[in-house]
Length: 201
Image (cartoon, rainbow, N blue to C red; front, side, top):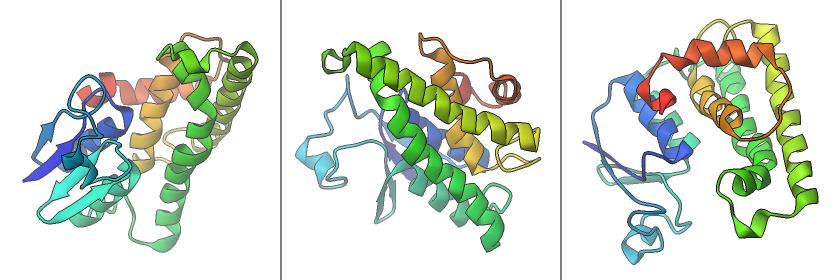
């Protein structure tokens, strides 16, 4: 059986849990991370030297990086609807997954750490303003894409890109800050809200 190491509150762990639900895959999960077993524990570091969750154990295979884990699970299950096998369609899904992990994450990090985690190291007023502005700007990119598709990130059907970006949308909407009125994102969030308890949580 698959084993997932990481606390369920982690957005990156929730990507993997949601993917497992979509694939109807049984798994065991162990709590690791802040508030639970520390990821700098030598036993954890032998699995992921970056000391980050999640980690997936599938037999003798050890995987880290949440988006990679999700891709692997979909490919193993042969779920072309979530992760297409044809190069062009697959690249479209992976493009948005990589955008989420790179551009979007880099823009929300300071504001999230300041406003939600209340990190003492992230309380500079000017950097917070810039962080909120950058976060909202990146969400504007997603708003434009959803206006074009009228449904999900890559078109009319739900894909792996919607798992990673759906959770990012929820994080943005829950952050205690001012944000633009993005109607396509609001409609997208409503479409996803009843899909899984992982998203709702």
